Every structure is written in structure tokens, then in C-alpha cells.
Length: 232
Image (cartoon, rainbow, N blue to C red; front, side, top):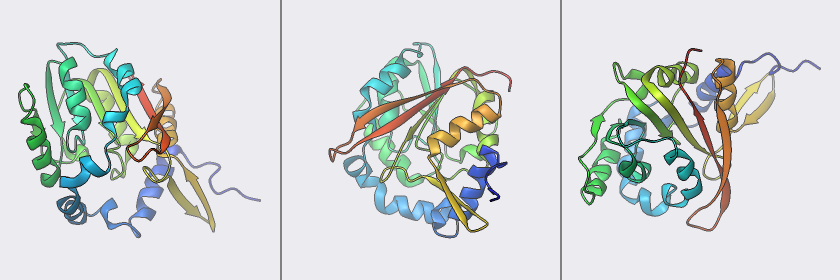
């Protein structure tokens, strides 16, 4: 029996999953729907869905690669949970955060810290031009990106020392990517597809899984994908 997924590249799988998800979840590609969601949920996000406070082993693996003089660029910083963890380990920070509602919470949280407020790019990562950094970091921020191949190449060009992607694995915290072709549906975790796209691009990387116990007691894996930038 013919397998319609057999010759589908990982980057093509990601794009098809995005395009098919758009019909059931308008937030996937509708900026207005996305901002409306955060207007309703940003203020309670840290109370209801915190991840950063429960990732000590994972983040210790990140800290090993950070230096006091580094400039960190974080994609999709949200309310700043991971940003606050990394602030003592780097010299300066910029963030990419297109949601005004999320950035308002970020600023309120940051006011309690003894560090300068990071520079903010109030736009989507896919549209950002001219940014550079020593370290690029993103945690669960890839769900609205259609062309992941291009976005990963942009990260690879932007960072001079290291790129880190943190991605939750498994429901309810991160549902899989799903593609339907010729009446068959295949599901793959976002972390595995991200890793596979990097392999497709010829970018040598590490993908490590860390068990994390969330606030509600549920334990699930969180992937740490990272690499030293270079030519693909």
C-alpha cells in the first residue's frame, strides 16, 4: 500500500500541519485572533501554565553555554519566565514579542528585577530584520510559524555562538503536529520534527529530553534542542 508520507520532507510535514491546522484553530495564522486570546489570558498565564520554574535540570544545561558578556535574543519571550532565569547569566537581552498583552505582563514582572529592561522587537520572528546575538533562545514559541525551515536558518544566521529551542512534548501542554494525506493521518511531536528539519538542513545538533513535573503534578518530557551555528 502506498504511503503518502514516505517521501515527505520534515519541513514539508511542518508546513502542511500548519496549513491544515489553520482551518480548525484560527490562532495558527490569524494575528487578530492570537492577540485576542492573549488579551484574555496573558494576566493569568504565569499562574495557570508556568513551565520555566520547573525546568532546573534543563536550564542548568543551558547555563553551561552562557557567558557574562553574551547578548541573548529570546524569541517569543511571553511573560518572561525563561528570560528571568537567564538574566543573571548574560550581559544583555533583547526579546521578540509581538503580543502587546503578553509584553505588558512581561514589563510588570521585570520591574521587580535589578536588570535593565530588555530591548523589545514588537514583531513576529519571521518578519524581523537585521537582528544579531550571541545566543538565540526560544521556548514553546514555534506554534505559529509556517515555514520552519526558513525560521531555523534565520536563527542559525542570527546567533554567533548557540541556538537553544525548548519544546514541551505531549498533551495537554503541546499537542502533536498532524497531517492528513490521502485519507491517512500521521502525528509527530513538534520536538521530533524540529530535530528532523535541522537534520534535513545539515545542521548538527543535540536533542535531549528532560522529565518535568508541572504545577498540577503531571510529569512529561521537555526537549532541549541546541546547536552551534554554522553553515548548512
